[in-house]
Length: 380
Image (cartoon, one colour):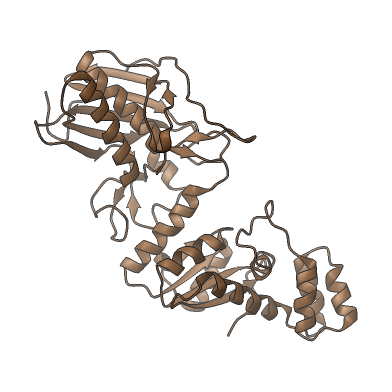
């Protein structure tokens, strides 16, 4: 039986039926992370290696007491190597890896060796410091490693053995999926990350995006960068690059999650943080909203009108701003009258950002742009 990290290729197995564990949900169906799927696949393969039979469905224990069961989509056992595959169901969350096939190949390690993780095809490898894994390690995060190991240990205890195993996790088409994630930017190359602190995907929590923001800050800090830019999209990234000459590692794709950037930087400070984004989005931050998504927060015309008044707008212009259908319409009306509404919004957004940063030693600035990327307001 092989104990080296490159075992013989297994033969293909057939898919089997099963049921999916259920969680309580308020309207939206939750799902399971790549880590939970990897745990299920590895657990099934480890049991088959001992008994010759794959449990299907396979039940696993996840943090917080969840005990879902997963159907296997493929299985094989040959040459001392067991392989099981699970198709990820992210529930009602718009997860880029929804439907991906997560595979685990498992074989015995030397007695006393414990569990070692290997990245197979489609799982990225860490190439930059600052992540919770050493450079050179497969991007299987500490959380999933922990509960994969715990589930293998439970199988071993039940069967009267020790959990000495090599676990290779792979993801079908993972390298292609990774191009739609932050992984290449933060130095995880060749595939996706196996994520999931709890194993559960909460619909529209966008936890993977927020986790990517945090890892982006970590990698930038480890690289010694002192000025980061939180950007709402590709246009704002271009503007940040042109204005400040920042390298790619310094650009945080914050999307609508201004609060996630500010809260994490408050705990992991850098010398300078600039938020660059569309005028309408940053007007929401100026009004105290940390989530800038159009479906969750709206532009507040009353707040815009108050800012226009503070910038010197006449009562007639304030009324026009209050009645504007869009934030850009209000901005254009003020611009025509020589009222710097863009700067007023930037200053209010900076004040809100500073409130979230609290006492962190971070100099924060704001740059508001229009859809073409022209700067329409900024702090000094």
